Length: 355
Figure 1 (spheres, rainbow, N blue to C red):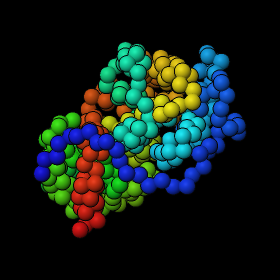
Figure 2 (figure 1 turned 90 degrees about the horizontal axis):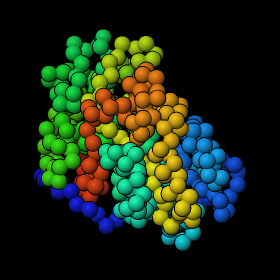
Figure 3 (figure 1 turned 135 degrees about the horizontal axis):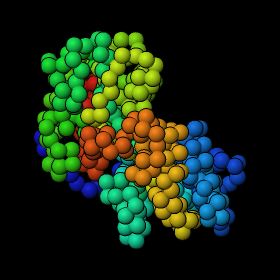
Figure 4 (figure 1 turned 60 degrees about the horizontal axis):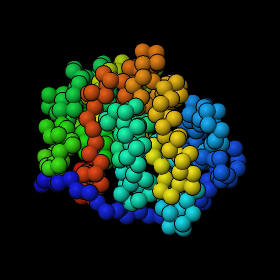
């Protein structure tokens, strides 16, 4: 079955009862004429954003930055605020890509003005841009292999999904369907960015490898644990998790033939501090020192190539945005995935569940 890429008018979402304001980095309520409110991820992520991006922006502009911790609730909270006509956020920081594209289709994040889009593209290149923002906090789904447990390690997606030529117990995503379908499309020999993807061919690849899958992972910790314990010998997992295993001294190889998984920083629809939000976007794109500091602190990729050049080589070579790694990773066709999400998810879920 060939599914064409189409642009959807919206997406259904279950809205939960969440407080609109969340919690801010300074314990204050969002607001004020010289304020910028960023919805972020909490913990170390918020700390790295404050140190490397928010505080330098405050010093450069005099605009006070407040950070609202809203991990995994940005979409539902934005929907509530837009519905209530009371948007309190300006910037949505490092949104998961599928959520970001869905929010754009739903009208929850803005299309960048032509001037701002052009300016950001000049700094970051078109590869790091969408209509609504730029990539940030990016990672890769990469191949990891226990060299002591298998005769040969797959080094490409085509090899990974070939259990005859490359036998071994595997772990694969059990829930991350947008990333998984991109890997399957690539492994089936198709261009992931095509307008005419053959879903049947991609699912056939998954069905072929499924008997070799011992773990369908659902968390980062689980990805590592199954390799440590020998439940799986070959995996398609987060790049950061793969290098955790390397740093532990385990006999694993990491191969960057995988899937690029970007985050996206965007401006909220009806942002109360529009000018400040646009200034923050431009400042962040140009702030190579801040991006380098964030990347080193979090082991996530950043979009400015000059920032990557500032990093120690042992740090840069582990990031999805390192040029040598980026060129090996396939891109995800998010508009196509969202337009066909129900069928794609249903068919992958059927294989994962053994139905």
